[in-house]
Every structure is written in structure tokens, then in C-alpha cells.
Image (cartoon, rainbow, N blue to C red; front, side, top):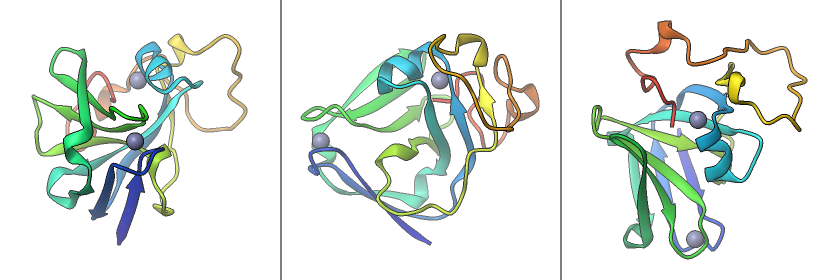
Length: 146
Ligand SMILES: [Zn+2]
Ligand SMILES: [Zn+2]
């Protein structure tokens, strides 16, 4: 499976050859602010399955929590990937920048204790106040699913 993604201005582009895992909607305040939205839909991707096609030099990384770096296009501000110092083998991928259908869908809502008061969850996916501990190790990033 090959997936393409790009930022709003089109200067930053990437391609993924591999599976996306751990798709979830994160309602934490950092994700809400980083995306200017009710929540961030994100997945995990293996670093080795991900490659930049264009504009990697235009990325700026912001360390939103210790060791977690959110990368965005410095021209248009689109969030592109997150890098984790504790696990360089994985990237956090916001699905909003995808140009292709990844075939996977969100499986849960996390950090709903930080949910925006003006947004109501209307689907039947499981909701977690924080991050479910059973997912705290392995393919999904630990405490903060950035
Ligand atoms: Zn851009
Ligand atoms: Zn979050």
C-alpha cells in the first residue's frame, strides 16, 4: 500500500509504504491547539515506511511535551509528523494531510477529559479519559499520542 500526503501549500510531501496502526482521535488540549480543531486524528507509522518526497527542509519541529516533537510546514503551518525521542522507530501521523484513503478508520477517542466543551462526540467508538494503558507500550506511542 502506498499512501501520499501533503501540506496545505503543497511544498511538503511524503509517501508511506506500509501499514498505519493505532488510529485514534485525540482530544487533548495540545492536539486541539496544534490543529485548530476539536481533535486530532492520528496513526502510528514505522519510520522506515515513511519518506519525504519534497520539502523536508521546510519542516519546523516544536517540542510540545518532553521528547515529543511535532513537525509542521513552516510556510503554511500544516501538521505533518511527530517524532519521539524515546522511540525513533515510530512516527505519529496526523491523517488530515493524507491525499489517499489509508483504508483504516479511528478506533477510539482518547483524552476526552480534555475535550472541547463546544464539541459533542456522536459516534459509538470507545472513549477514554486519558490514554488506555493497555496501549501504552508497543506500536502506539506511550502517554501522549502525538
Ligand atoms: Zn506547506
Ligand atoms: Zn493529543
